[in-house]
Image 1: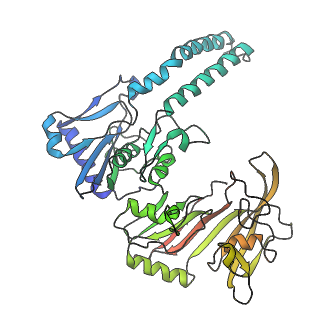
Image 2: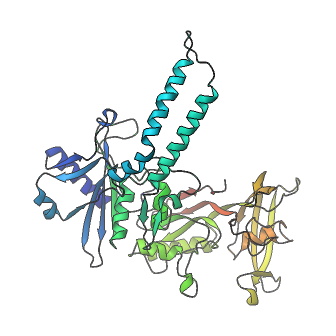
Image 3: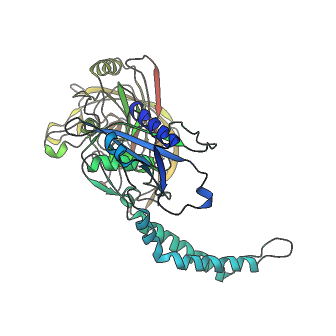
Length: 459
């Protein structure tokens, strides 16, 4: 995943830690018994530089995993350096206690399974088919392993930027996360910062130890895709696809406003979440919007100069956007592509709905292309053949793509989950199946051509 914060300042602190380790000022203390297979493995060193409410800089330090911790040989040095060593979110003792319940039975089952396997081995080295008894032992072990993992994962919860706390099993609802999720440097550092009302400024991770095919010693790496990418967006409130000093590109989740609305209940939005993480951001960073129910790529500006330049690109239609959608029905075979021109204005009595008005409505032009037909399963278990389409908006009007799909002058098939223009009452478990997938523009400061592609969760 893309590093959520600037790495430069924290990287220098990581180098200091490694220098202290190499010169013996600091050591990596073994907290739990070390297996033979892990003795030669390296470790990630992580640093988060944060600010408190008085703008004082605080350096948070940690290492990946739960088996080691950083320790100054001279305890006074830690006070002099004003450093905080961040411990694991869940201790090794608590993890072992969670595993203890099933540990003995799992070991016994493993011995029995190995005995069954050995008894099936033929003289030629091949194996006979598994017996029903062996299959039952294997299934029982799988059940206990899963139960043990659930026991461990239930211990993990993470403080978030908005002051809330989210459990790991709430974040990973669809399937169990990989073992070790939550033990990387980034979630530990951010969890500590958010629990103590600290604002992140710079964060970096450096690999220290014997180089491997995937990691080189003393090199910096972003938070991992396998584990951190599952939980950091939930902790931060936003999913950062790209960030520099001038702009940020996000993958907006469905169900969140792009900008604040009227009233206190509509203040939770992408803009306010961004400003919470990056307090130096300009007051109005948004340059375009996505409907609350729409997910996908969204650009925001950190500076006034970048904001003005991006606004000009949108006004002059120099930004290329592509959306993907699932229609609540099947397009006829002869309908493969086309262009829809509509004229709509807001329905004053039923905001935010739009109504057709050829005289006073704003012109909305959308090109579209059918991708394929597929089977969609609704929350009640019913199935339906639907069409997946790609939209290319040439203008930027409110609900433009939803109307291009639903209106009889367009495709005449609403997007699945459309609570405003859909054919059926909205199903709470079905989100709007509309996603901003591709975004192309010119960087407002460097002039570099930028291209981003972000697949929808309903792919």
